[in-house]
Length: 602
Image (cartoon, rainbow, N blue to C red; front, top):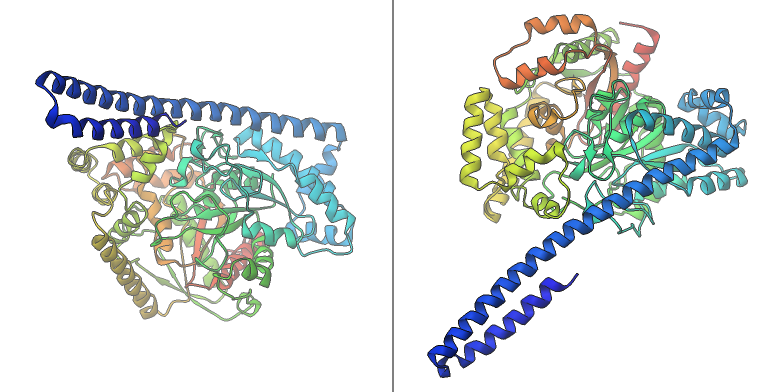
């Protein structure tokens, strides 16, 4: 719609013409000129308002059409699979195979790529009915799987392995929206680099999964695809922003998936849903071919990474990605192949650990998880050293100022004609407030909640005021990184273990009131350290009972207690952290702990 620019051009032209006539006009004519100018201005404003509401209407219609399109797509796939009359036993056998066994059977020809695809499509649709984790079916999957079977003499390492993709991964012909209506009806033309490399290795992309609107919250809901639930309790969140991926994998509907992480988006969902994930160092894997919203800031970058049910799957995936093909498609990535010698190294390590980062104490289940992993690693001969992260309040300020340097303006602008999801409505309302009013709200909130982090979060969301202040922010981030590395070196650490998050999965709609927990994950985005999350236990009744010793001094601490009621059985993860480009070391520790867990060793 071009009404707004046309009115503006016409108005400008009319004003210039009338201004030239002003000196020669009579008083009566001048009144007419003033009236014309005023009328033109009002027409311009009315046109602008009309344009705004037209765009809102247009976006609403796009959302309605997309919802229907996705619903029909799933129904069509379900009908197609029912016609195949695949037995329940055949499906269960395939989806129950561990990754290495599935890989072996596909390589040997015992099962076909099409059979595996159909089994996982059936299971994925079942999980979707419980959690609403799938946004779209990838219809080309059938053709890709068939081509794998027809060219069985040329099998890649991921031959026939079905993979799921977070919705922000670009696939030609599919919208890549990040939950934003502005990106609807704009199908991607290029294909994500990682997807290209994975397909060359033989993988079969088969579904896309849900994300939160704008992908800057750990809830998982947007107006286009709705709310995603946790497979262990659909009334609770799966985490975010890769929540759809985690829900699908934890529910058994995918064996290997891919998400992204700028503040915990791979690790939080893995912790809350019960799977494992790896956030690589920025630059280890290509980030080309994803939705571009928010990519203008470069002080804290998004990184893409894998998610799976088992660590072996993450390892195989990284080996398949760290190949010349990826470097050819994206020369900006680091040319470091997977270093098997680091992954298989058996030397003893110095490992730091903590259960409280100094911002918000992790809940009893999350503390127990870390201490149990500590005991496992000590039993393997490693030395575990208590560690306190450097100034978490300062780190939080730096992270939020970097990622919201514009004070939320980009969010407000892109959502001005969109439906705003209820899970981020308070945040958007805060971004829209006059600064003086916002500062008062933050001050009052600090007094009411008795939580000093309320002030840290609140003030940081104001962003920066100038380019000079942005440069200074960049310097402060580098200084923080230097200080953290010094403490790491002073303790002679090789790695760190810590809670996967401050608490387990919480009920839908509560994330806006419980933001402090993100300090456990955003730390390693700011530092750009690789971090993996592994599920190591489940919430037990003793953890709930131990809340009697958990502090209740702040509003946030009280909410943590309240929302963890009824959480028995929910998964609990632990983070494993290494220095930049030490993904192999992180995976080694995750695998060692996973092996101990499977063997029932303490």
